[in-house]
Image (tube, rainbow, N blue to C red; front, side, top):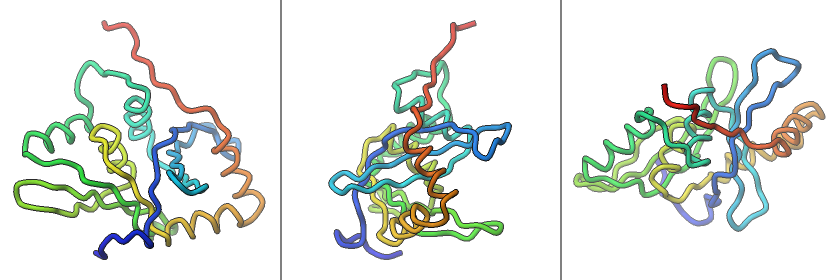
Length: 175
């Protein structure tokens, strides 16, 4: 894995999680939106429904009755004496006829600094619970910009996601 340099990565922050129906689909699709900290850039990443629920809950301060998977992972990290140093959305990954983003969680712990391969949704959920800087690789941002400037339908979908209200998770009454 390559070393992090200031010129290869752009610092980002978690902005929101969005649930939106695309192309008149019956089921919504879920996205996390990252905004540039010091640059006027945006990165939209499609994520799963469960990961969106967890991340939206963490961003909104929702306390679940029992630990969810990200809370469990954060608890394990702390119990083992580690801390999340940073998250990097650092590569494009070919999957079943498409492209997704890959991430790396950089962990400081008793064994030294370790790089852990992750899906962006998992790494971002951990960053929401164990605050750490988030970076996106220049190549990832170039791919996102190309998508924004691609055909009109793809660009329109990205604008719709950017303008959508954030997903809100509320806990119901305990039963």
